[in-house]
Image (cartoon, rainbow, N blue to C red):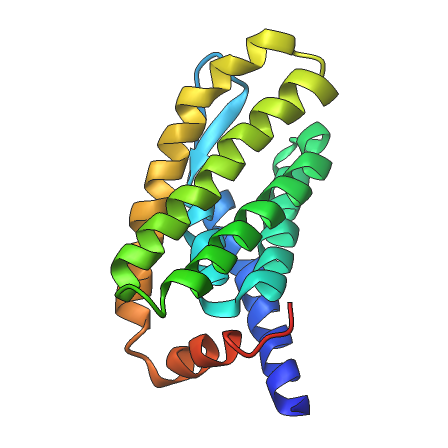
Amino acid sequence: MKNDNLRRLILAALFAALTYVTTNIIHIPTPGTNGYLNLGDCTVLLGAFVLGPVYGAAAAGIGSMLADLLLGYVAYAPGTLVIKALMAFAAAALFRLLRGRLHALPAAILAGVAGELVMVFGYFGFEAVLLGYGPAAAASIPSNLAQGALGIVGSVLLYEALARVPAIQKAIRANGKEAS
């Protein structure tokens, strides 16, 4: 039991670091939105599928928030922490629910879509209300949808490849036992 918790904590820290790196390494500014496209959602969703709702949410929120802080998007950091954590939580919970009923690939796609919708609407609400952009926040929806599509495709491809690795298989099986 203690080893499983330690393993999950280490994997969560690894996924938080991977999320930061994949967000930071390639970030393409999106015109007119003050945002950027990146590969971070690939590891946010992959972490959700591997770690489950609680550890996946922690890794997603922390890794994504660190990227915002260190890339100069400080005003977005609190929103990113919550939005990316909720995104991963939703994707992981739905993946856990579906993977017993569907093959892993359609379960991951549906869970990824749900998680990315949380992200798109989460940032719209955050920008509209908390940052005070009002209806102008809708301008970020197309780039967030593109970000989401990239995240879904990347995470599903990575999941399919990594799910064959024995250590990842063990983490995926353990995520069904996580108390959340």
